[in-house]
Image (cartoon, rainbow, N blue to C red; front, side, top):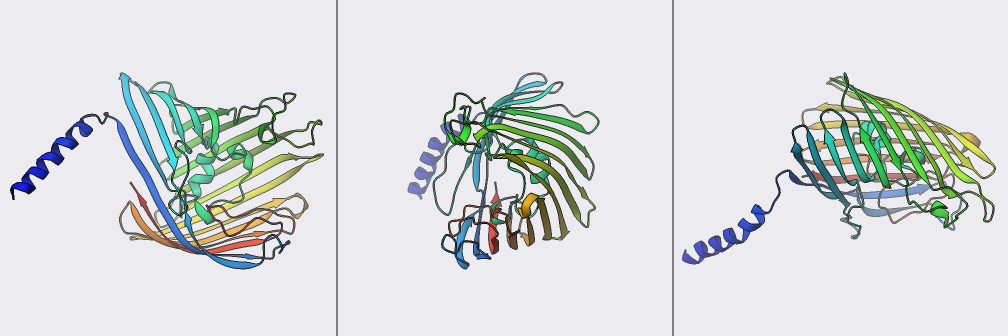
Length: 361
């Protein structure tokens, strides 16, 4: 008994300094999310590169861990930061601050400004908002959105993001990113090119069960489409309108995107729309999700998902889904997720049946 009391006293003494050093306003949060899947490739246009086959895989669905901090400096004005990192539970690795990570300030009267790295407000206000079945992660994530929405980069480096106060339900977001900052972008140094940059602008409206947003995204100079020393800097634009409405028995979401991107010697226009529905009943959810890209030159695709969630608690769920990306003859869209068993080829279809577990903390 004495040994137990002594051990408890030592543990309490060791823990007290750590607790005392925890700043007020600091939150540790995260998500762990893994699926077991059977992934199938059909209709491959190049079976030497990617055979038509099925493989089993454990897939990490964008698990993450983060630190979030906000402290009022003077009445109505606060300092804030966030450091969020990808955690790959199935394959290991990933980098500190690889996701939304920034420092900023917020004021009740003037809004919030953040400096750092983010996937951007255009994505969050529409695409992410209506992807309800698995946080727009993994193999069932949105495979069809225009790359310019996220700066052709996913999470964008060197970004300034401003969010206005809410005016009668309306919020304005503006993001400006220098991406990798290097002239020539991802195709290598090229001093003759302008610096790469991304602009994202969103107007959102929230009132009760309704969320609606209209957005504009433009990404320029992130690659040279020509062969050096010739220059044809990339330029891609997307306009999107979307939103969701909670009918209680069903949450219905939809978006429509019109996009244009440069290719060598010309451009490609695309129309993309998606509809998503969630039917909650008790601890259960049924999800349906369908998207279609109509693109020049038979380069479009379709994607659909049917899913089921069982919410054990608000933080923990077990779930399953079937998802498919089906390309047109010239389409080259592929499923997302940290998968290792397939590569992208033109005209192929990719499908997966999955069972998983997710916990938020």
